[in-house]
Length: 590
Image 1 (cartoon, helix red, strand yellow):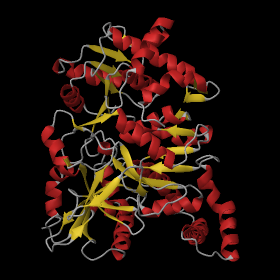
Image 2 (spheres, rainbow, N blue to C red):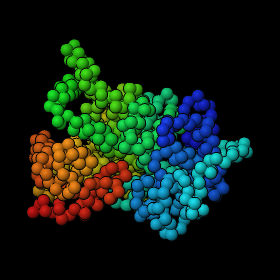
Image 3 (cartoon, rainbow, N blue to C red):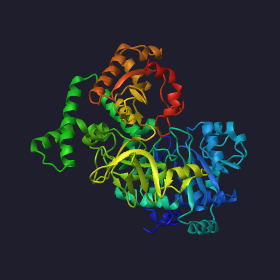
Image 4 (cartoon, rainbow, N blue to C red):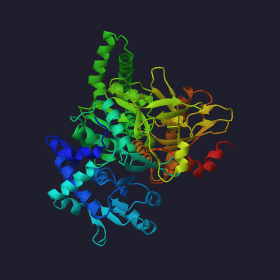
């Protein structure tokens, strides 16, 4: 493919008429949207943008969950040479205000009454916003807010189509397309500037590596404010496959069966929840547990032999076939019966989980990238994958490891810089090499292995380094543990604060006739405390002495995005939690 901006494909959407562009569910049934309707809606919204004086380098902010209108708006902005500013729907009003003012966005898209309520609290502090559009029904009292339903129901003339197509033809590869604000685990968000060149480089190389075609169907539930979700949307434009929008995270289980996808893009937490559900369902039935563990043992042995091109005995092959048909197939069927593979990104996935799903017939391909690299720069593929690594570099990506272990990247996929932040840009880019902030190593075969975030690495008082994400990931394999915070920098030993999966714990309490009205009593219940204790003991048995968790506390709070403990991509906000729980942390070192 020529290195042409993605919007240049929009006028050709009508040629894909035999294919379905999108699927979504209304209250009862799944509905389809054609490529020609998608094209017309993009043109209609682009005309609206021009009427509101949105053109070259003008910025439009979107505060919405993932949905069809998100895609329409995104490509309409590109078509008129504007710049999109995605904002997470669950951002706090203060976070919204910071991004809106820093980006100088002039038009704001709100999804629903929730985002409208947040906007009403900050609108007097956001002087750049001149127009507001609402995706869902506009309240009668808000007469100044534009309705997207009205915009998309307006007839489109042939002259308007020609006008937009002329603008699209003038989009240049080096034009700025979007500013994506990082969610920031350690500080204020920074606006990552991405041009059409970065987008095209990522889409054509990363997704082509995985063998995606127009015949694929993906079920999407990643937020499009996250760069991995956004790339999924952009790749859809290029490859012409079908995207189905999940109703919600809570309904993914039923949506998977109904849609029967061939592809899934997700963050590790989705797979962790399925894994812990399976594990916890076996706890009260020792016979089922014994059979399942036998099936996993056999499956791991055979799958490992396949990966390493080793000989497999007929006995093991037969045992694995029996295990799949009688025991393991239920896990695979939860994802439908057409799934080719899943792509996991946004954070590291525990190897135990990847191997578990492989044995069950669900291949999870881990990749690695950042917002600053337009998502993936390395990825495992269906044809070449290694658990414990994030795969080989993609396309033009060059990697090297700095003296302190930091991963450095050079590629067309690397951002232009941080918007209105020359100091941060200069710090991140040196002689064309982007400093990722991650520690890792290049394996003998060229695959990249990630250790942890450079800023997150713990150096104990004895000078030993500990990767907290590794320990936190292992702890979360316990179905009752939602999240954990590992601490120990400049201390003699490692400690952990453990936040429980409240919904799971309450369900377990009901099964065991344990009163749940007093949450503080629940978290100190003898059976639960003993369960967590055994988990810590078992984990420590597999760790080096300096990594082992010497003390821990089960805390009352859940770590959530809403209470500021997690980023929108479900990563622990360490600085926030270290400050919030300073007294508890200090008490574990007394």
